[in-house]
Structures are given as structure tokens and as C-alpha cells.
Image 1: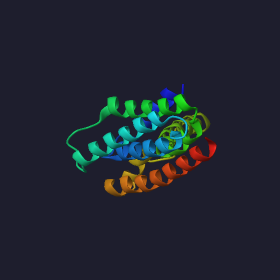
Image 2 (image 1 turned 90 degrees about the vertical axis):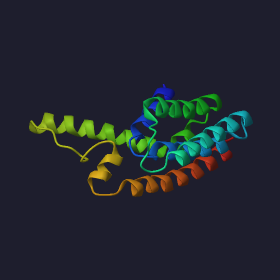
Image 3 (image 1 turned 30 degrees about the horizontal axis):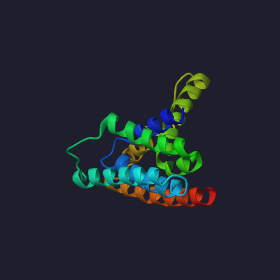
Length: 170
């Protein structure tokens, strides 16, 4: 179950150049540190996945020419979930995947709010201008590189927190 949820959350984040790849790289770094005391081979796998994401980002800077697509984003989420499933580190996964969780939650909130207001008032209203959340920020006038950079800052803080939680709980 967690594999499907993690893959779907990562897939919802895909949509801006570098958003899913950079957030996934940072999540893999956090998970690699978190699982290091339990399974060093899995930590190497996570570091390799982070390196692959960084290589993809360096090759495919802003104004992307190669798109990751559903195949890539679903695989990244599945790999993160597999790291957690093999070690039992689900709470660090939840923390390190915070950007993915926020993006997927914005879609759920948008749908629930629309259906609730349609049932109450006869017409649906929206909580966000567009879901997932990164598209809402775009429609608010924030430029794509600024949204991605902000997501990187949040992801790096969450990766550090996930690594800390993983290390103290191992």
C-alpha cells in the first residue's frame, strides 16, 4: 500500500522542470542516512538514486528538453517506498517526502472541498486556483524557478530532519 501511495505522491509533484527530480534527490539523501545503521547496502542504493536524480537535473536544467514523465516519477516514489519497506523506516519516509505529501494533499483537499461545496450550495468552489499546489503558485504569479527553489529549501530541511529521526530511532 505504501508503495502505491508514495508513487502517486511523487507523480503529483511532477509538472515543473526539476521539481520532482530535485525533491526526490533530497528525499533519497535523507532516507539513505536514515537507513544507514540498519542496511548499508540500501543506503548505497539511495545515494545512487540521489546521484541519478542530480545527474538528470544537471543534464536537464530549467527549460527542460527531456521530460521524466509518469514512468520516472512513479519509479522514484516506488524506490523511496521500497527503502522504507525493507527497513521499516516509514516515519522518516513520510518526513523526507514532505513535498510529495503536500502536493498530493492539495489535490485531495481540492476535490473534497469542491464536492462538499457542490453538495451544500449546488455549485462547487475551489480552495486553490489549481491543484496540485505548484500549479496554484504558478497561477498566483510566482515564477517556476522560484517555486522549485523554495521546494528544494523545504526538501533539504525535511531530509535533514528525516535523517536525524532515522538515526535516533535505529
